[in-house]
Image (tube, one colour):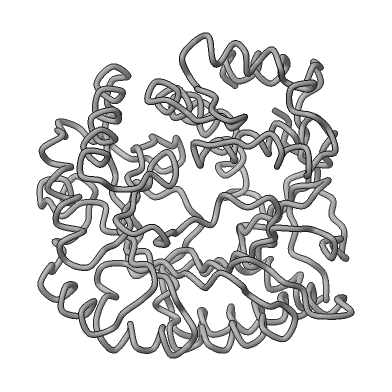
Length: 417
């Protein structure tokens, strides 16, 4: 555990008590009154396992995937059936893995969700570049998908080689996107790879928007211990300069910054499963965030299915938030959007932001991390870098430990941070 994250946690929560995730769960989740609720569905199968990817995934097998989806639909019904009436949610996102490998069954999953929920802001799905063909895109659109996110990582052969990925067929992708339109077409890229320059990233950004993207996400490379990646992380100073230069380049081009790492060339083009006040997660490794708890499903496909067969939720670990812990979680992920409205904080918690964290926000302004205009806080370039820098510590101190453990144990007794 990093001393930085430990001291930060102790200061912000005003206690020396650690965060403790325990092997317990509620089989009936209290989400009926939750506002700004999102949905997430995890499909863990990939044709090839990328060494740099930390997410829960397995090699694709058609029979195994079909069986998994049968259980996934049962989990959705197990959670949704307690509702007395349909619940409005703002979005539904499919992640993985490679959800498009199950493209023909996504409509069935969406139909199960529509039995209990009304989706107001569209449905998104992640795709591997090899999935971007006209037939797959039409299948997705017919199923009700309105947003797609293509995990390109880079168009450059030298960086794809470093990542262990095959070359992207840019012409094929462009032609498919011309024939089948979506509300949002996002493309993901990784920055801070060895010897990567701003010119390399500018080429990726320009190519993405020229072939049909209206939204891009540029994420930093993170060296998770359990992925056994041989890629050497970029030095802090170089990474900061690169992040600043990427941001300035996108702003000069007139792109809209939607979050720390995302930009769009159209106002309504958005793709984010993260910035939700509350969300329900379905599938192995999926997480659920409610007003008083955060839970993580087991990473084991087999044990996930065993729990569903017992009509039990597949929860592996749960943390019961104190109010202040929940506030920290809210602020951390709301900051991802680069903006924070104290009125939204007060509506959610019934407490004024200034009373709870007045000193911290005063200090952030003095350090040049944020500015304030008409009562709303806006993150600066400096603040965006240090958010990323702390998020990197958070990821390696918390997520790396948790995910590393859960990849080995289906139901660990507890994890303490």
